[in-house]
Length: 200
Image 1 (cartoon, rainbow, N blue to C red):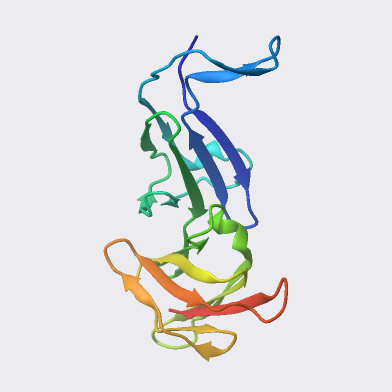
Image 2: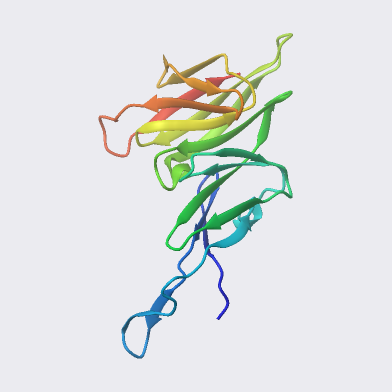
């Protein structure tokens, strides 16, 4: 029997997600109708993931990979991949988000609610509104987001300001990873969509 890691992918409105699982050592036995142990001590396995593992993501440029269990944010050039090594019953969930240049030399990619397994599922839509009439062009990234908690995006430069529903909000920016995070409060209405704006 070939030992390999299980990969499952899905697509959100603005990103893709790939779950990688080490399920070795046991399986469902159709004849006995119960789980059967094949290997009492299966080993560690390694594979790699990349944005193209999400088959329906229509993107062939650079992407951001957010690794859910480790919390890492990695910038991936177009053809690059990430190695994954998992012990038995371990998993990692990777969120791949296309990187887009919103203003000259400033790139952006939405991540989502960082403490939710399917982080990108919180983002309903996002748009970029450019203002290139001034000497220093700016842009505003507008996102519609459901849920609450720690929200994150990749942005290659610290923003001018961030707001949630029109109110300027405090944010943290990690320059090394280009990770911007802010806290989204608990909404008063069910299925409420927050309006988040990031000005660069």
